[in-house]
Image (cartoon, rainbow, N blue to C red):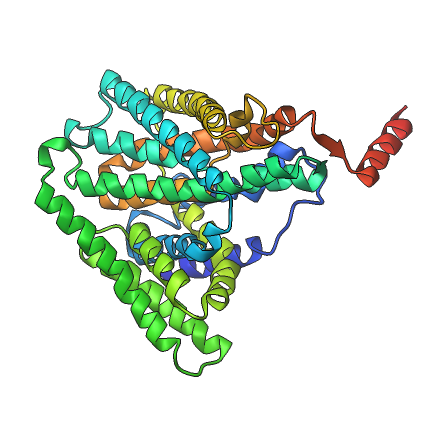
Length: 415
């Protein structure tokens, strides 16, 4: 009975939450971004979990794991579905090079700093410490688009090239994050270099690719028949469930398998756009449900993990700043790029959360530490990132006339 009630309640919250909008509310951009990225649903999960109503207790969360796997596969599929090679070739190649350089710098620096602090405070078992550090480095490489969307909604940005670069980086660097994460799982199947083996890594890579290709071919085959929109939705749900379940059954990553499935579908399925519209429409509901489950399973402990979280946050800010600066100086765009543009790229978003959820399902011992680090970092990043974007783009931002007049009228009324 508790499981059924939990499913109904989560579904209801996710459905209602996916239809709410906060762009027009009178809130600061920082609070809008926190709400827009769904951080509040993590705290709702805490209330429903063992720290609150205990509706989502440990036993219920264990029974809901299949939904987590489905959600991770769905997010990976959605992300992969956006990478149609013909479409990507039409974009400036230097954008891809800039994104690759900044993502790599962030990954290396954050992984190194995280590893150092994990060892310093002896927070994790030695055999999975390296995997935990690389997972944080992978998550740090992501940039959410929410803060950029909020700023562009409130301001008119004249430098369209710079805005396009920021949007491109925030769209594509998640791919590098997932590739780094997949490489970590491939090279460190047991969590440490001591367990690494070339043959095991090769097998892991081959199986992961096959687990994405097989469901994609099933979807492509089904797409050759005549179907309605509702039937195609059933095809998609079934294929993504198959992809996530197959990965879990073999103890592999549902997120990586979904990514491969999405990339294959994007480039070989004739109904890519139809699939994309269905998956995007349901994305927010699924993401909200994942955040609720993440919060319900979070056990916060005020220990040295907070110091590691601070180190992670600071190292990510520094790495983003240095990474974007170096990348835009090596591959110089034709327009002016602020030297500290990386400060405007610190919003984290859903891919980082999905990476943490996935690794904690594979290695439960990492759950509390990594969840604490990513949640605390995300709250701070989502709050300050819109203001940092405005500060970096101060010389190219112009407040839209209607908003400017509204602000002036409000000031006059106050006086």
